[in-house]
Length: 167
Image (cartoon, rainbow, N blue to C red; front, side, top):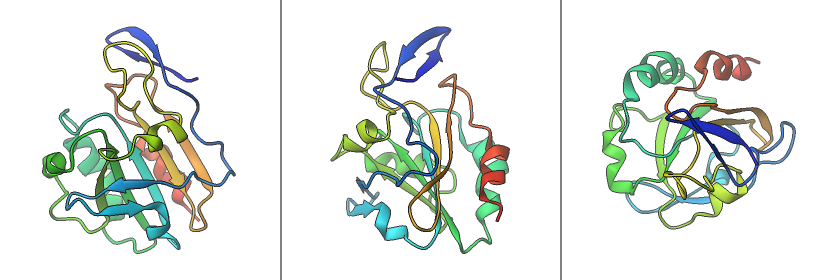
């Protein structure tokens, strides 16, 4: 179980992020057009799983400036933004309509993802949502980086994520 804070209080997730060097758990999530998305759809690329509870938070400025622009010209990596939101809310992500390297996915049809990745919030006012985390997966599906954000209202350390992608 991992611990994070929200409004100064500590809460728990159902487990830990997958360990570095392990095979990433398979998943089926939902695209904004309601079609299925699987991790295997992105085999051969490095995949950044940017996991958090909702797009309805001030996120875009840091994400746009520090993270998404680093992938603009990379063909070997893709960012999957995974939230509890319904697929219809995906348009709230600033770059969702203009980026082919950032894909928004919903847990709408399948909560197994949150359980398997250890990010399901178990208690407190956000129970049932996902804790903010990043998992970087290599081209063959192994975890090469993970980061559970200690305070759910803070951004991940995008510089660490980018460092993990260096060959």
